[in-house]
Length: 311
Image 1 (spheres, rainbow, N blue to C red):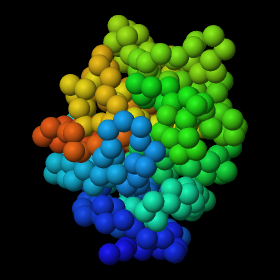
Image 2 (cartoon, one colour):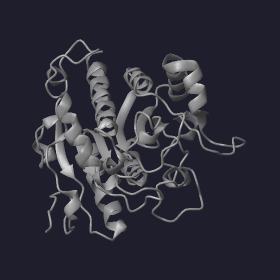
Image 3 (cartoon, rainbow, N blue to C red):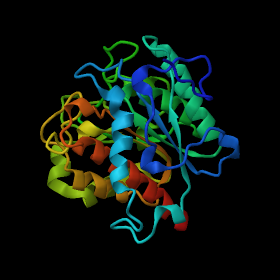
């Protein structure tokens, strides 16, 4: 059984990549040129770059399904407006690739994101493991130049010893390729070892964020980013496993969901050019709390875009 995507010709979709409900039940879009949507949601059911527990290939379907729990709200708390009144969003489905051939995923994902950004639209991508951020950043940088990166994670993902397709090396390669502006990028929630001396990113580790809280974290983010174009990548393992058990490489002592949502809401005013939420592994989830957290983070990003439009 295969499923084709008009944006990814000659690719076979694995069975696990089929799409059920769209994110937040937003309309499906196939022709970007004729769509008035300002944000395009894509799913990337890929976890061949995972080094820990597998299952992030089911992340897009899990997050989309969990998002339905929030569809009933009109004016969503704590916002004072309905999203649909200020922002048009559509779901383009999943990026296709040939099972067992990861380079087809790279090629098709880069093409998908480049089509979105060249159409003047903001990409919101649901993974999949964190490797997918590298092809996304390549395409975003082709349109916007090197971007400031706000990276939420338990791990730095700057490891240089991994394979070509490795979710722990995406940022190492992004820096080498010059597609990330390291002087204006920041990592939030890190709580695994790295060498600070000569390290190119500012890091607010998990303990620092826990001690200082979301507002102090936001102050540091905005100081670092300034007026640069900003891409946000959120590995769900940035959250403590108590709030996000459904992920491949959980690390204790992470952020609470409340803290993370307050930080995302506080990104208002920044020049945001895209976001992804990755590493949701529904097989290790309980009561969909990880998928719901990821869907909520993605939805709050949309509200931030809508708030920015009003300003």
